[in-house]
Image (cartoon, rainbow, N blue to C red; front, side, top):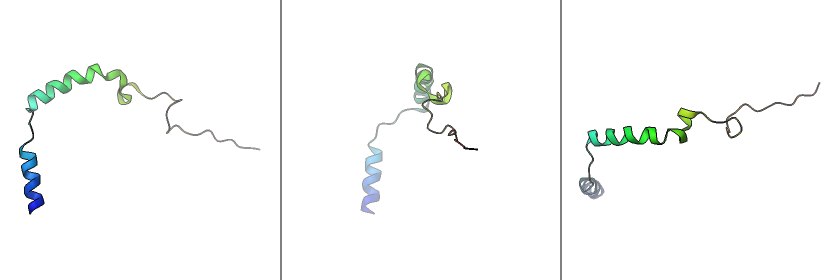
Length: 59
């Protein structure tokens, strides 16, 4: 119970941000960093570690 109480005191002392302010910050952040987001720009095939490997086969 002591750990739970300490955790609650810790969380109660944190500064909170309003959802409207967090959403506005996110809307501003997203376009500014879009060029660095691989989900929006894609990953080049040379740096993609999950690309299909070429299989060498001998006949």
